[in-house]
Image (cartoon, rainbow over all chains, first blue to last red; front, side, top):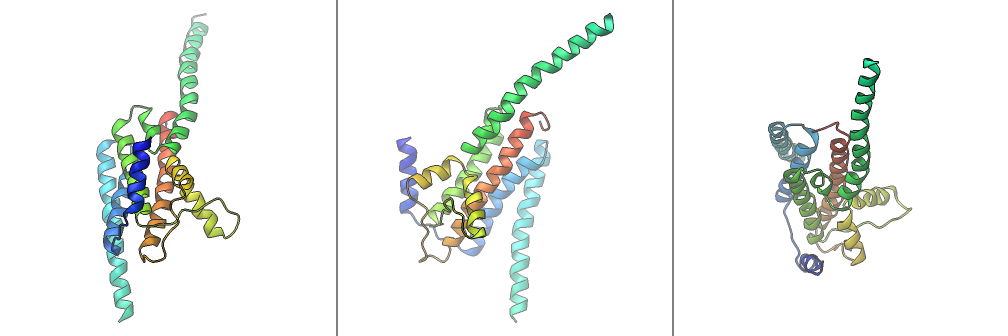
Amino acid sequence: MADSLNVFAEIRTVTIVLNHFSAAAVFALFASIVFGITHRETTSDMVRYGLYCFVMFLGGAIVAGWAMWLLRR
Amino acid sequence: MANSALDKTTEKAKAVPTETVSMMSVLAPAVGWLIPGAGHMIQKRWIRGGLLFISIATLFLLGLAMQGRIYKANGGDILDILGFVGDVGSGALYIVTLAMDWGQGAIAFATADYGTKFMIVAGLLNFIAVADAYHIAIGKKQ
C-alpha cells in the first residue's frame, strides 16, 4: 500500500506535457483496448474491433484537424 | 413419472448455476468498479482484466500527471456534476486521489485540461468494463 502511494506521489511531482497529437494517440490507444475487449465476443474480433476503433479515433482527429485548417483559410 | 423426474433434474441443474451467477453478478461489478479489471479477473479472465487495468489506470494516472483536475461531489453546474460522475467511475483511483488531495489542476499548463478529460474518460471506460464484467457473470457473454 505504501509503495503504491509512493508511485502516486512520484506521479504528482512529475508533470507530463503532451502535445495535441500524442494526447489523441494515447487516448485512442487505451480507449480502443477497452472498446475492443468490452464490445466483442471472441479474441480475434476484439483485436479487429480494437484496431478499427484506434484507426477511427486517430483518423477522425486528423480529418477534423485538416477540416479546421481548411476552414481557417 | 419419468417426465416429472426429468423435470426435477432439469430444475436442479438450472437452480445451481443461477445461485452462483447471482452472487457473482453482484460481486464482479462491485470489485470491477473498485479496481478496474478486477471484475474480469475474479471470473478468470486474466488477460482481459489485466489489459483493462493497465488501460484505465494508465489513462487516469496520465491525467493526474498532466495536472488534470478532479471533480468532487457537487450540486452546482451540470458539467461539474457530469465530471464528478465520470471521475467516480475510476473507483479506488478516485478515492485515493481525493483522500490525498491531489488533482487540483494547474492553470499554468495548457494541456492540463486534457488531463482532466483523461481522468473522466478513464472513469467512463471503467463503467463500460463493469457492465462487461456483469454480462460475463450472468452468462450473456463468454
